[in-house]
Length: 426
Image (tube, rainbow, N blue to C red):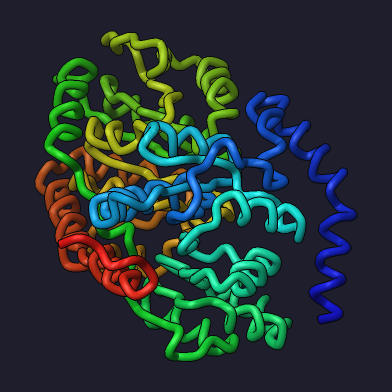
């Protein structure tokens, strides 16, 4: 109880620092200056109460939640859905995916008063949190109001688990207030058990990220875009790149152009506030560039397309022959390789893939993922794949097979959610 009180006091004390951080981030993305009231639970006019609240902190989690939200809307058409995020980027992804079909606000900071206001406004029948966002005040208030809390698509890395073990008594009390943790795999599940979760609170459902699908409409758009952009050119994509990776990618592309003069690179930074920065970097390295947002069609002399739009990554993967997935050359932990795999692309990643450890192990074992340590190896692997179409197809086919074999997490999760929701109409 003492540590919980200390946590609350400290969180209130650091609010001025949080405001300064928001203002600092707003220099590159003005959206960080807006909607501050939502961050403190003031959202009565923006939500429809007595439904489902689903929280996804990142863009990746929002993408994984798309099939879940659509299935919930079909199964429980009378229940309103509110989706919460923490960033403008996540907010934009929700709006582009669902429009007016759901309510959307920021999840408030984990302050007692803010959480109470938020729960009074939403009054949910259930709250679902994607992956592992454990906020003590939120968990406590949900438990106090007897609102079921489900952690869906839950994962807990070895690194995070070691950190939590240092405060195991606190974690045990927190975990015991959660209704159900639906873990991605047994390894993650056992880490939660070690921290104090009861086995009756655990379900192993698999990863929702394996339930990604390329719809016929999206596939048709990708084919059309490929014919417009590069009907007779090889294309590789570097997606979700972070600061420190773009230089490596562009330097590798410069070397590859010596062997493949008509090679086109689609470079997609992870964060929208870096779009202009990466475009400027590309130009400074003397590449001929265009931006996706401009609507221009690459000419024969275009060497780089900057993917500076939101919600189009899955489409852009469909234009490429080879994919590098970012966040893996820097110590971020990598991003989701399955979006590329869904298009039957051979996938390349750097050495830092701990965010998707189990998924990457499956892809590597199936010969669908190539891991590279540096720029030299990246150039070598891309060149090898460009030289041999059969080799590309082999890796791409293996990637799709991994998706197919691990499909089904969504149905398992929906089955586990049923006891916590009103009986649906059949």
